[in-house]
Length: 279
Image (tube, rainbow, N blue to C red):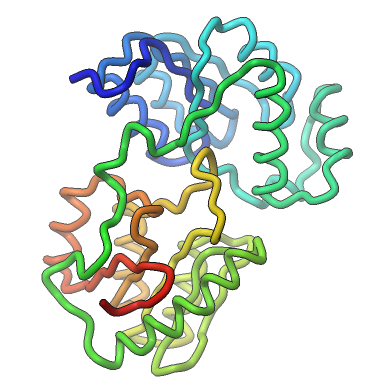
């Protein structure tokens, strides 16, 4: 079923299953040709099976990446999948363009680097689409999304976590917080969502509430909040009782199996509006 007037698509792939889901959905929606660019040591090697042509590069090879973009004859591109923050601190092997860009960027957080790259490449004629364009039906809706509704106490923690997570995300620190009984247990830093949940679960014990939010002005072309089956397994390991995510901006991968397992395991999940946590 063709939903978009796009015959060819390029995907710059980060880690995990997000790029694979984009490729599958794009193909189902009528995209005939898909080109993939993956980063060595980051992108899942199986991603190459989902595209017609695959290029592999190092994370610091910005010049090589631009060359591929310009010579591909593909106009529309998507960035999908996370580039872990820790790579900004490593001694990366840059090409000339990569070194120039990295040194010239005043801030080294994901938003500044990825946003800067998109601006740079669009000046060269490359067009970037929202990374969720082919996955709109997979975004979280607002309201209770599981069979198990939160308790009154969990709702209070959810509201508190929402307020803190919004500030945290807007400060470019992280997107996830863990709360229990009105106490802020853990804030996400460079370690990422899964490690934050596990750390929060270890500190809080059974019944913690996890909240994950996007930025107030989230650029949906990159770094979109994503949850999936791995997130669910981490929540279970941490013995969390509830997950709150931002409605309309959080992508749920493997949606059918995600909710089947969440309901089977007795976990609650809520899609949150930015203004209030309970409708």
